[in-house]
Amino acid sequence: MRLQSVRLSRVLLLCGAVNVFGIFAVLRLYLARPPDSAQSADRKYDSAGHGESARCPPLRQSAVSTASVGEWQTVGDREAFVYSAYYDDRPGIGDSRVRVLAMTTDNFAEKLFVCHLWYRDKKSSVVVDAASSYFGEGHEKKYDSTFYECLLPTADQLTAPRGVSIVTARCERATYVLDVHPVRAPVEPTHDFTLCVTPLNFRFDNHNQLTEMVEVNRMFGATKFVFYNYSSGHRVGEYLRAMKHEQLVDVIPWPLPVFVDTWPPNDMQPPEVHYFAQVAALNDCLYRYMSASRYIVFTDLDEFIVPQGVHSTWISMLSEAAPGGAYMFRNAFFWRDWPDDVTFANTEAVRRHELVTLLKTKRQEELNSFYERSKCIVAPPSVVAMGVHNVVAFASDASGHVEVEPSLGMVHHYRSVLTPSDVDVANTRDRRMHSFASGIIRKVARRHRHVDGYLKKLRLRSTKEM
Ligand SMILES: *[C@@H]1O[C@H](CO)[C@@H](O)[C@H](O)[C@H]1NC(C)=O
Image 1 (cartoon, rainbow, N blue to C red):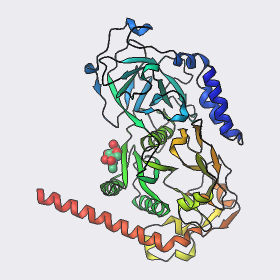
Image 2: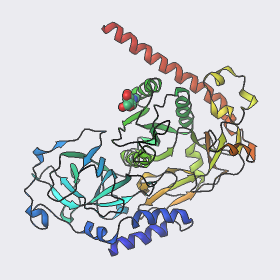
Image 3: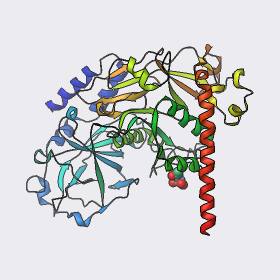
């Protein structure tokens, strides 16, 4: 218990104690775990002999099958679903543990969840109680995203289990094993910037938007794009496969096993999780790419973190910001309902590829404040849990959020108005994106040609095979 509160105060201090909302988010994460369950997480049981688990018949590894990657596994009577698991022994987090990404109905951590840890050199599982820490963005839905945390027994701190199963009682037989992926601070990262995108949904099929999004972010420094695919249309599917072929894009299946938002909304069948379990996808992405990427960028399809002033890339922009664990950028709405800028309104390529970043240059004069719709670029080793607009928990040795001045970088957000009166707000002309115009037009045109070429080759091959 003392351990928990020490860690809490440390996290608070490190968050800079500047922003009430940020602190609230962190508190929420830790307070979601009531004292009892925090304590029970420190109690450890192992199959070798003490604790209640000793009375359970041993569960043999060979009796449990490994779950397929990219599938949600059901825990108990749909009390929870689990998706992926990561072994975390970063210096800043305390005891080493396995984090299991989950959606759970257990909003107040009243129920017992149990981890079976599977080791290569042990015939049966090591059993410990799971603690959970919510990301605090459940929006009162039936399921909330969480990490189950399985703190490793003292004797096994240094060894990553090969697999884990979460069950609802100590003696319950697991029916699946999730592979456990070790995470490490990147020594020689493959990527400077990996971009994690909110799950694709509503059969998203706007290939022009996808192409512009990829090429503009590539120009700023992204070398890997990660798409969580709940549903996407045929045309976007072709584009994703073409870009996957050149290893620019990874597509992670995201087949949510619960009711989600539909368009149009269906009152008879309300969504059971907020917005396609977005926050779960972001956290999966954080851990999946932690070892491979120096920075991770979290934005939606219609948002761009745009370097300002003399900077035309993220790396150059960040070199001028104070060092930190997460760089936070303020949001600026460029309502799509506002008329097009005349500068490119008659440029054929801009029209044909619907280049929103060049057509929409009217923006809301007043930016949203930090933590309100802001987006982040994070140094992944510093981050324990990611929210949609800010980091929810930092590793204890991380230095917290850096609030980046809009003169250095801001979020350009291109979307339709939320309420009709939004178009009436004070606005200003912002042609920052025009300084990148020739690059954007050239890169977007080349991307469309590439994809066409790739698809033609595929078709040729399949006709030859017939
Ligand atoms: C995305 O998911 C849908 C639904 O499962 C599937 O039909 C489609 O092929 C997937 N697209 C890609 C590019 O993986």
